[in-house]
Length: 305
Image (cartoon, rainbow, N blue to C red; front, top):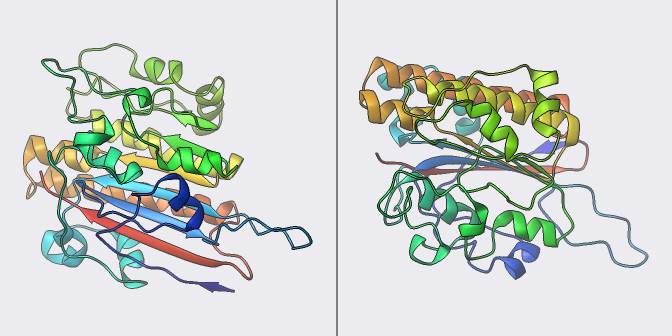
């Protein structure tokens, strides 16, 4: 029984199956986030005739938006308590800096993460549509193949719990992200874009979460709590082979209060706790480590405000 963890920054790596469907996914990933990829049994080669079927592989990609490298390089100096991030850091290697896309804002960055294509070509050139405060919410705006497309083409199960530009994404289990301003009933808007019945099933198991419109100071924290609880339950109940998760409160708070504020430190601590909930769910589901499976954990640092 062996678990290998790698904590790396810079480039997304891919196996042969992904390379065929998303040729540029190995390009330098340019974004403002911390992306955690858990790859269990990373080889995707399908079993040939007469061969034993390959074991299931699991990929969990978690973005902690706005996380600065100093936070996990010098947590004591930053005044944060991040046992889960430090555990991952200490079991692998890590990046100190990287290059961002243009523009270095959340939605173009996260779309580059899942396509390997720059914002000028991937269809998401900014957070908002031209001349408005309307977010690019829809996966149909993405003009190039995505990571979930590659998994789907390979016959693998897929899930998204809060990821930019994913309304209408063709995945098995979808909870899309909605950061719209000035709207009522944010959970209802998210539920309306989710896989039919999934939102309600997750509420029944994980509880309900009152999430306000994004202009509210605590909107990010409340949305992240929902995201963590729902993602953990999706892992336990469905064990998707690909899961994308976006935590955004660190970035939200740093914009509002500054990166060296008590509020920002609190947001970082909460992000670590949310990460811990997902790691625990992997253990509960029995897919974090198993005999004969090599686990590879990749963390990509992408930062800046």
